[in-house]
Length: 114
Image (cartoon, rainbow, N blue to C red; front, side):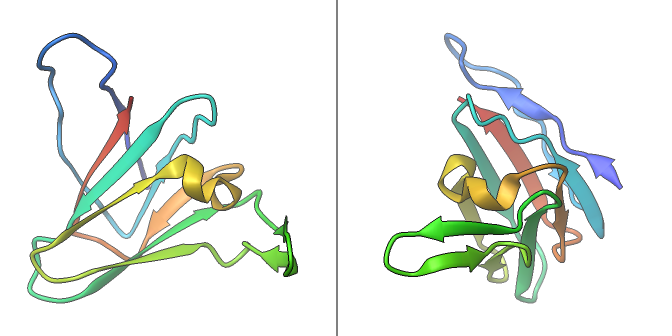
C-alpha cells in the first residue's frame, strides 16, 4: 500500500506534476479545507473501476432520501485509454478517515491541491 503524495498546484507558473502508478491498494490524504482534484488515467486495454473508500464513512443525511450509506465507497469507471477526474470535496462523505484507492492497479494518478 503506497501513499499517493498530493501536488501543490497553488503556485505561479508551471510546476512539477509527478505521475503515480496505482497498485492494488493505495491511500490518499483528504484535506477538506483544500480544493483537491484527483485525476486518474487508464493506460490498459480494459475497463477498470476505481473505488475511493474512507474507513470513517458510514452514512450521510440526504434531504428527501434520509440516511444514505457511504460505507461501500465511491466507484469511478475508467474506460480503456481514458481518464476521469473528481473534485474530492464533491464526494467528501466517502473520504472520511483513511482514504483507500482500490480496483484500478496500473492506472496513473495525480492528486492536485489547488
